[in-house]
Length: 296
Image (tube, helix red, strand yellow):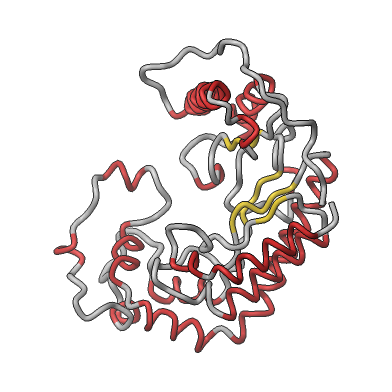
């Protein structure tokens, strides 16, 4: 795997040239984030934790955010933060890498941090139950109602969050309602019953995107990272991704990443403390062991 550029040194950076703002527009958000990260890094440095910083991500999934494109002001702030902390990897991540046109990613990021999802059968189910849309007439449709828990309230009774929350996220009101009240057993059963025609395409989606990321990073002379993967955004208590199919896809993604020199790779987005998959300790230890044993 490709090593990150430069040694990690413990030092305190000079005082920030970015003033702390009181109010700001979306166009200024990159600057605000960079200044906030600069203060946080300085604080962690004074507490002796700088050597524990593996990566600084200015913004998560910038392509799915409401901010301007990274090329329209964001890359300048990545560069500014990197100039303040040249010993650290500083970047911004993409939720869906433009794997067929990687030249669209601006040069200057410190690491190629992308998220790789296969979706496939999950996308088919989400479209069938119309769960990613907003304001659909007759929501929930019959297909979604068939997957809801018996005690699910109506959409009207469930209510809505504050409107600003919907403007600040790509997660729709229909997805919030559906994922909160889905019957996870019914959800998993549908995915397993229909996965067959999609599995090879999902494998190829994951593989092609990982390879595109790795090759682009190599051309840019920066480390490549897969920060999220591998099936997609699922209900908390669904088990499709942590089941045999999901784990096999995750292992295929990890294999591809190791074969193509990716510096860092997540085991699975669901293998996290806030997900039930965190309890699959043996699988996680086995995957981590083979990643760490892979030649650098």
